[in-house]
Image 1 (cartoon, rainbow, N blue to C red):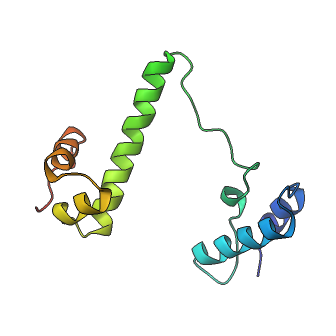
Image 2: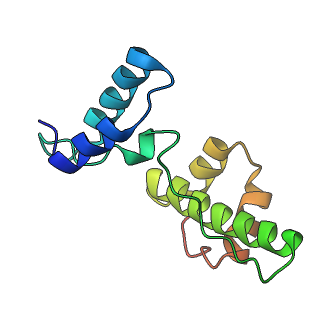
Length: 115
């Protein structure tokens, strides 16, 4: 089942990839759906995603640094969660050596995990 909001988003989209793109969007939405109703398709529609908020009051360099820090923190937390807080396994998964991974954990205040 597809919610009316999701159906409206699908109807508004221009479908540059035609039927194959529609199939891919539906498959992804089914995979992430938490119930038997698809409610969220917007994040899978390439032209439908909102532009991320960018602080234009700072320089490009500062904005990029902030975005990188947000990504690194979210990635590190996610990979740690995926590995039950086991730092060595998370570092291997991330393709980082243990020392560099641990330094980043400390930098972002995520260092309270087992090794």
